[in-house]
Length: 157
Image (cartoon, rainbow, N blue to C red; front, side, top):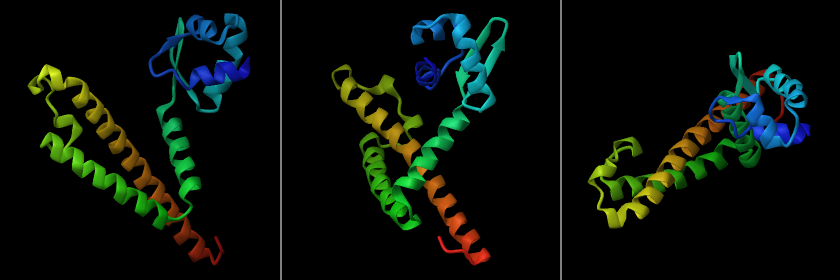
């Protein structure tokens, strides 16, 4: 049960009542509450309201996990730099397609209805790439900081 509650908690992008979380986890409300409080204590969830209790995932925690996973996946700042360059290349292609500098600058009202599906797909990809670049850049910064710290302390990586 705890696993179902934890998995469901990671999907809570909007404040959600305990009753609904319990339904999703196929558990009784009384059984779910202690698990939700435990997740709040660990910073995985945030309590959005008290009465009635609503919970939402902690986006800072989710970001921390994504960046930590990227640091493990790429292991070196150089490997991340290569990935960043590939994503930036695709980002430039999408900016050229839309003829704007940012996905936020795209005006969907200007798109012909027959092209809307393709535009939505490309815009979604661009937003995902923008987030991925932000995460990769932060992971690279943290790996570099760790290398500098280890060097200053005379420690081997």
